[in-house]
Image 1: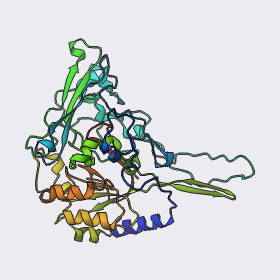
Image 2: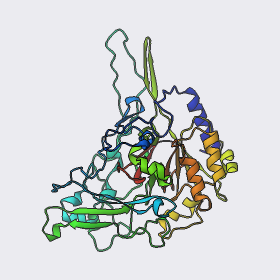
Image 3: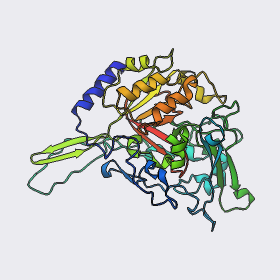
Image 4: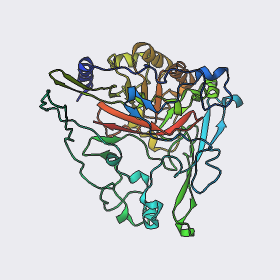
Length: 433
């Protein structure tokens, strides 16, 4: 499907969908006077948005616990303790705030891989990157040809139109997994980017020691350590993760480049999950009955002209329709595979200030995604970030993996860690057809 047809299709969809709005069109819900979790309210409290568990008019529920020092930690009476540090602070002269997190991987809301309690699976590389995203992310498809007897109790049977290719949480293994040496490769399942027969796309880069990070030629380095090992007599394997929060595929909060927002607590736990997770809809009619599965709008993946940064002129040429709220920009960064190179490359493609301003002034976009570590071109690093984040209306997702995905319309799901006090977070993003 070419880009013109994609935009036409999107425009038609926008024109025929009836969409109910949320309480606010911003990426951050309206502020309130005092955060009940704060012990010492100050004059900056009116900058702190409501910390919510329910979004999009009661359709999205956050069932993850936020990370804080007093949350329980396995076999500890002291809780998690300090888990965030600020090695780069604007108060100390840095251009931006950049936190580092140190978390046991089995803390808070988490997932177990088989290597947690089976050492042969651990040695074989049966890690969380091998988990089946189709199992973890249901893709609802509705059967619309429904005949109702409207004088009786209304009953609707909703059936998936297709089933998964596998009923197990881990797809069958295959002959040899690239990059694994000296391990029992027969136990390693296929590492995939596409799930559920081509309907789910993982657009998150896997974290490795060679994942690039800003201002470094060495990548993120060793970020996992094994604090408890079955080989040393422990009952299970237990890893510790130490990582800069702006590593790999990640999300920015306004406190990244605005220190007053950082001080006010405008962290990643305050981001609006309705913006980060679009929901498509269907409508059913039956005489006096009207049923609506409401859409908050899908995401549009667009290709940027490969020979330039994203300027106002480029934004105009993309012809993104009004009403589109989530756009992922694929650029020359993907063609050059910059996210696969450990050296940080300042020649990456990003938004110039005028391109960012044109987007803010002329579109309804609230989620901006891009395929390198910064949405802003290196020459306009701070000015572009300031344009996007100063009004707290746009969420930035950076470092997306957009190779081998066709441009077009998708449902997007992006979920950051609920790191209380952090101005950024690693994020897992998927696209669903």
